[in-house]
Image (cartoon, rainbow, N blue to C red):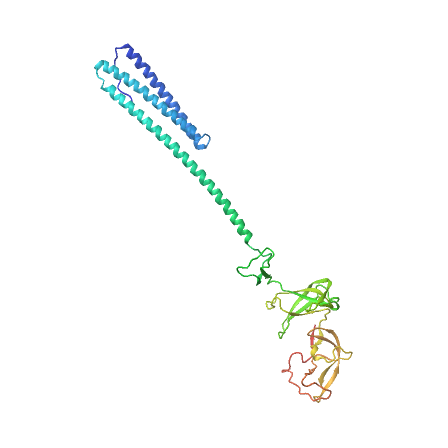
Amino acid sequence: PNGDRPTAVNHSGAGITLDLNERQVEEAKAKLATEERKLEADRELLERGFIAENEFFDQQEMVREAEIALLSAQAEVQKTLLNLQNQRLGLESDAIALEQRIQQARTEVRNAENQLREARKTLQESLSSVETATIELEEAQIQGRVQANELEEAIVKAPSGGRVLEVAVKPGDVVTQATELVTIGNPAQEVIRLNMTTLNAEKVEPNQVARVSVVGPSTEVYAGRVRELSLVAKPATSSDGGGSDQATVAATVYLDRPSGKLIPGSLVSVEIILAQRENVLVLPPEMIQDIDSPEPYVWMADEKGNARKQPIEVGLQGAIDVEILSGLKPGDEVVQSVEEEPIEEGMPLEIQDPEEAEEGDAPREGS
């Protein structure tokens, strides 16, 4: 703090001391201003991360020391002035008050130094806490990645999409990497695997048309094609473990479109079309008598309603249709023999109305 300077001092030694103290005050002010500029520059460098915090705190200490030096110089000036006043007026009370202010300033400086030390301590503790939290976070992230990898390895992924047809395990079963867990089927593709005799296999070629039907009362037929045909015949084995002379050839038939009805693993009947003709006369094979003999025939009714044989010539034979080469024409009515009452030549027949006759009672055009 600055006090009032007396207008005149007669003591030459006191005047010299006062001038010297005033120069020291000016020098202390200049030094304080310099240190404050350095402190402001260090603050910007600290905010940018170019210097360490310790360097900034050291500069703060230099500023405080410059402030103390200024206060001391100012105090000396005041003290000199008071001495001059005391010499002039004989009063010493101002000197005592000035000394008290100096002590107060020193106390404030000491308090500021203590606060600075506490701030440094708090900062160091905060930095330690941040470092500890960073380490714990990294450890938690590593543990999370380990658990995620373990979970990923525990997930069983199917090789392809599809529908689960069968689950081979139940909760609590012990499984390994080789354990079969589920059976997956592709609902967009139905495949039939079959074994043929070598005599039949030599007539079959890939891409031939096939007809697939369920073994049973259902008459629905599904179209497909031969996709794969093994080039190796495998000998079949009987159920009692003994060998069999009948070798088989494996083949695969793909349906043209999914049936949505065939049950995976069930037995089906497969008819492979070896040859095909369009717009021919056909009959169901059960309507033809002695179909494998040189002289096949069908039963028809003569003009009197009696049974008579009609010789025919057959061509291509399938599971549901037989080609009629000659002996019949479209619209001819034939009669089917039943086991309970076999038909004989000349036997009177009870003819059904054509509208009530079942499909297949008359030759029809087919392929």
